[in-house]
Image (cartoon, rainbow, N blue to C red):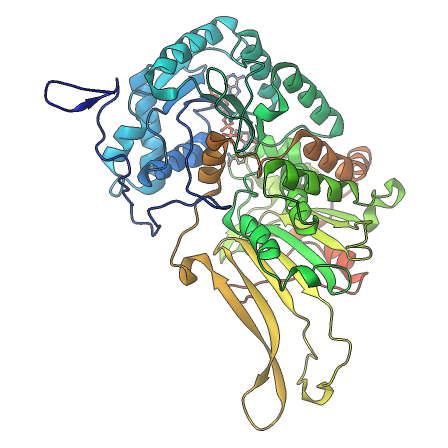
Length: 554
Ligand SMILES: NC(=O)c1ccc[n+]([C@@H]2O[C@H](COP(=O)([O-])OP(=O)(O)OC[C@H]3O[C@@H](n4cnc5c(N)ncnc54)[C@H](OP(=O)(O)O)[C@@H]3O)[C@@H](O)[C@H]2O)c1
């Protein structure tokens, strides 16, 4: 860095003034962005190469996340956004496209021009097909140029494309010498800083369509990249509450002693959406709820709830424990899949007061589609901690309410002292609910005495919400994903063996559903809590699904 004649700093980049300055755009946040597991965020600068930069994910999530990081002074100086795609565009048009994404997300009136200037300063766009070696040569030349301009030789390739494009992109990166095999992906405590800079690849979900395709993809990636360079995204794991689950379990003494089969009756993990397939019908028709949500997200959430305490808070230790519990999941018997899993599809109904069409009436959905828009799964874990405790996973589109939560249902007390005092419903067992979205936080319901002379009981909720209790808005999952990858923190990313194990768990269900297309798929009304068959699945064990309403934490 040098000073020009006027005394300004020059770095082949403009002088942005005080690098620690934080500009907030109408969102409550502390200036010092802390790492979830201690310490301030301190990502490395890099050339951030995005494939799929003209797509929905980039427009709605990735570019807005970069902007927000810029607002909070977290995006390191020297980071340059590089787009690679088949559409004809020059750097300036690319910049406008990115600016549009920020404006669309935050509203043009609150967008901070200085921050945009900083993030979108001299972005680069390389036009090329994904299978065109010449395009990758051009990309390599741009990256070489940027290496000398503040990125310190660090390169992050973000694959935000349809999964069908992952293998070709990985191969082309390898063929162009851009994977730099031998240079470690680095990461906290993993030897970062060696060599000419790090190279990392971030891969969007879904990771394969089944066990075989996940293994194939891993094989292709393994031929080009070292596993330490590979960041498989599960953006659910990057949500604040999910990270808080680890803190809740392992930084407090009161939960871990009851976190086992002696005290836990059953666990529900729910990801319910009110939206339909929107504009993603072609993708969803191929995927369905099991592949889209259960395998990449809910099984990973399950592993965090059920794993043993890791020996340390580093990526290897956490991921080893997750892997152990995934391996302990009892195989679903192929001959009795219906006792363990339910699929269904929504028909027309009312969601949040609005009439919506059924799945088969959605644009670009086959009129005779059997794709499931709802899936529920029961898992049992054959280990000492969880023997006999069912874990129920469910996800659906066009459900009654948008909510993602983990509910730990505890057992009833062994002696019912207050039999006479239990008006109506009887003693309600304690439930710990971790709300992943929206309104991230958690609540614990406990029985309490109703004030008065008589002894009457009523459940009350001890509630904690990020928004109100700490007056903080959590970072979006994609902000966390980007910063973690730039820092080389792999803790919240899925390792290859975990992705494969998730496919092993759902394998019998997938096979049964593919090989036995139903004569008629079970249905549920849009705006409901799912099909009767799912109620029956959990009722067979004497339990019921939660049906949370707004403001109802139970
Ligand atoms: N959208 C979401 O909310 C969301 C959420 C979670 C995960 N994901 C994952 O993120 C990834 C991207 O999803 P998306 O919704 O953004 O998809 P999308 O809107 O269909 O965008 C796909 C992007 O890939 C490019 N592309 C596709 N095929 C190509 C080809 N043969 N050659 C060159 N470019 C090609 C497209 O370029 P053109 O503009 O030239 O077509 C576009 O930029 C997927 O893996 C998806 O599963 C998405």
